[in-house]
Amino acid sequence: MGVEAISADAVLLPIGGVWEIRVSVTDVDGNTVDATPTVTVTLPAGSTATPTVEAVAGGYRATYEVGTAGRYVARVVAAGYGAADFAAYALATTAGTGMPTTDDVADYLREGAASWATEDLQDALDAEAAAQRAVCRVRAVYPDDLRQALLRRVQRNLALRQLPLAVHQGDAEAGPMLLPGRDPEVRRLEAPHRKLVVG
Image (tube, rainbow, N blue to C red; front, side):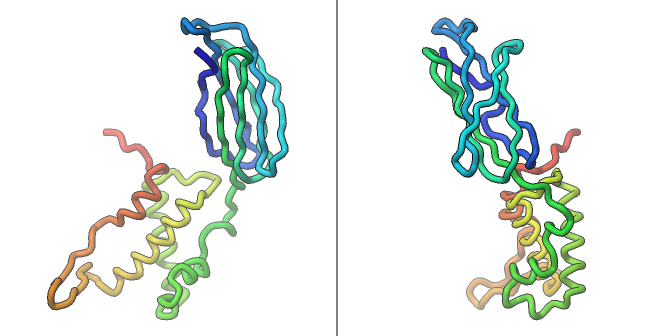
């Protein structure tokens, strides 16, 4: 019984994107009831909006166009049947100038950046951006987790250039250590965006 989400309860949208909120309302026996809910959207700045709700096959639907970046929350209430909460996060479309640059790489490397020419940083950035695109869905919005993963990819790329055999010499007690083939932190950050490989 209650208000149940039909659409995803959490979504990522570009600014200007349309947020679709769909629910069903059922009684204690699980039967659909005629009880049009109200939807209240709380915007990132704290103000609210009440989009129109329409009946559709299987339930009810409301849409809201997100106009600014940030977190939006929607509460759907059907009197006598409860409520359901939804969340959306809106991000601006990332133009070329918003993508990581060699300056961003230098900031990420901090003191290690001084040992690399700008051309080397650009070369590593280009290679790792291509490698990321090959395994991830890189959409119009470039989220912070992909950005962080790309910078870490570049850091690793540059570090391995100094160790062409990927062997890091340890101390007398630990001995040589083989660096892992894949960076677990990069995989963690990119996991939600990885392309599904079939076959």
